[in-house]
Image (cartoon, rainbow, N blue to C red; front, side):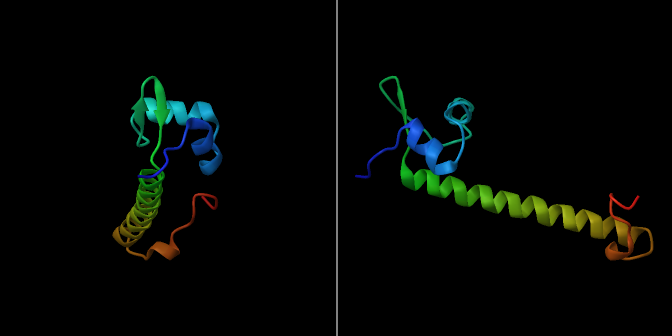
Length: 88
């Protein structure tokens, strides 16, 4: 059985403020277990959560690229011919 982490340990691991960890746990955005009144976190569950966040971030980025490509080709060009938001 793995040793569960407390809020301070998870905050240090994720480089977030403890208050942010409490907020994420309250919203069920972070895998959490209650031991009595205390919040505890499984290291392996946190690792899986981090991996999922990375996949979600990558999917969001890829989605933005696909939209830009689609918008550019609909206008008769290619995505790289479209001005970036900074250039508009």
